[in-house]
Length: 332
Ligand code: PEP
Ligand code: MN
Image 1 (cartoon, rainbow, N blue to C red):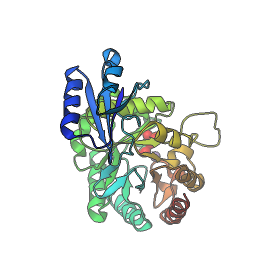
Image 2 (image 1 turned 120 degrees about the vertical axis):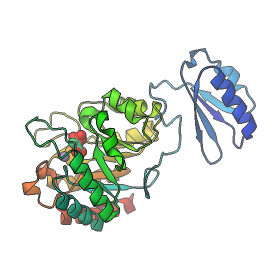
Image 3 (image 1 turned 45 degrees about the horizontal axis):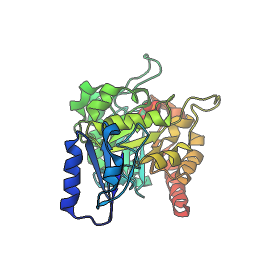
Image 4 (image 1 turned 90 degrees about the vertical axis):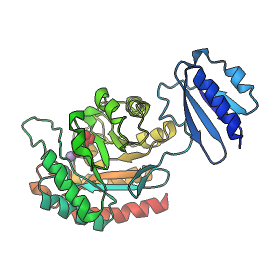
């Protein structure tokens, strides 16, 4: 249920109402806009007398929210959430350009790519240290050593780092990581999501490769309901009948997620397509669809990459794409 308060309500009256609602055993999510406050009621609202609340002097309207996701629902929080990662902001008109290799291979590689993508215009560095793979015999990442190399790249360039966490037991290794990525295979690993909800760190939540938008939002909800509101949604392609592409990039997800939720939505055209030459047109299409950022794989030597070389752009190709993205953003 959401309770919209009238403009410029006195703080004391507002707090009295909030205390009364909490006294009924409800959670109250407060969203304060420029002049209006929206209260999102969480819990068993079945017994709440909506008409009584509606009749209060300070209340403008009361609506029941039928969706099962509440904290991430735009009805609860009409304004866009802006996630802050150091000096970088994502959402509400702020655009994230996250780039880097699929996996960290050695210190020289990640530091070199970090310098290149920064020069091209990226504002965050990606790179996997713990790698989920389709075959267990494939390279699974440098793990803790990979995180150390990522830190070196951050120190060298100042770029905040985004990297995947697969197991909550590794959390203490991620202290210096700026954004924790939950990969497609872990989107519904609720134990992991719950624990990540107890960290204050921004979470980049990738859509499961066979999951619906509602399921993605329910996973975001799980993180938020555990106390962490810094969630970035990521569309990274889903399994369909596509034969020549790795996945199908569901671009309609971008405006739909924006309508349903206040969380920022970024797009990963690399894993969505699997083919480097298809990445730039889909990155531009995603930008035109209104995404809040792009996460793109870039490698200095794609032919010899240990992981996902076929979908990795070379640094100069990334630099050319950044210029086009800027041009698309100006148009929209
Ligand atoms: C990745 O970004 O490194 C990755 C493995 O992506 P996904 O989980 O979307 O496959
Ligand atoms: Mn990859």
